[in-house]
Length: 210
Image (cartoon, rainbow, N blue to C red):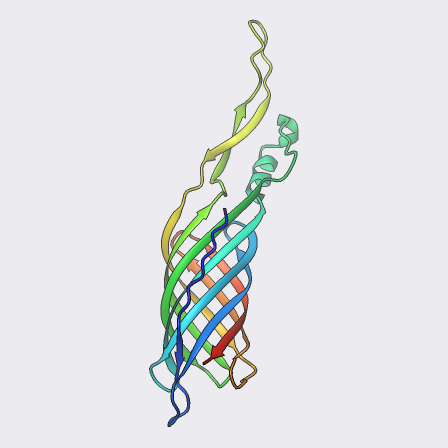
């Protein structure tokens, strides 16, 4: 499951008094971790901002996340049931993935020339292959009358669902260089939604002036 989504917005920011506002396209991409599902991946954000004062601005945009990894919940399930005694063996780790796309809007504040903070409310759609739980089942083949061989196995007890939820995120943006036409920097993001998805991301950020 791989969803690729990019949305392009225009970033307007206030300059010093007496100067015109500049148009900027900002994009950030980097490493992200899905805390709830114990998966690693990447995320992309594209954000637009409009100044509402010397320090404050409003922001709007969208984002996309993709995560991969082994199912640690299955390992916990096997260990809790004493898999060796039951004869349950995992021949290979279960590979899972989660992807999400979202729209967001909020406010931010410039702390200094190079540092800013902000917060967004968001609507998010997520699809995942991470199961809710497992259950032990008898997978022994039919042996005929008078024979009974129990061959324990497992199956997904509760299938994953697609989720539409709302949440919020906050970020710290540091841009140590002020170039003439572009603003390289770093962004650190923490996000949470009502489906208990917690995402932590570290981005490299570009803001190109026009």
